[in-house]
Image (cartoon, rainbow, N blue to C red; front, side, top):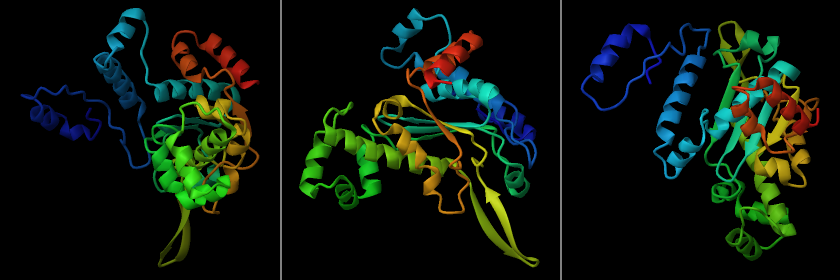
Length: 293
């Protein structure tokens, strides 16, 4: 997929003329220095995904079973988030899974931050952290925390921690494994949000110090929404999300403590994102019911 300068279209076509690779040329994602245009590219990515996912093991059966779109989970959650934004306003959605932690934000950011932003950010932004998960990617999160620190937080010895790690199940059942998973979830959430969010920094020039902003501004987020297995089923899911504003080091553009916490209680946000393409009103009604709003 080429989504760059229009002046290069013919050259790009020539480069791929005798290649087996399939070429898609779409509108420039960055047409002006202060403008982003990502939706045309996003649309083509979805089309390419849907075309090629059927070649994955077992997916041909799914294609034969359904007559609608097949969407990747993060893309489907983003569709649900955008649908919900039109109803309730600025929001952020967190999806902590076994392999990844996905962060979706739908917000314009504050006027104050927009005035000092040095690069434009998409209105609807998604980041997928492939090293932050609570089962498949669990060893990465353990390494990120550090085993000594993790053992201290769980009030266990290093030997006991090794045993917990070795016997860690996809769905925690014992009290200790639930505590272990909640700790992993907390660190996955905090690190994923900080990677997603922007920061303030000072630059110095002839006229003195100037504060600029880089990255996505989440300070205007009114709702923090939890979906996925961890943030819809763990006992302390709400308190984990409540700690996001408290983790701010002072220069991070994170949500404030005024942001309200919501939980996708029925764990159907991704499904409703797909459903919204054809039945937006019904999808929104179910989504609000699941979020208890």
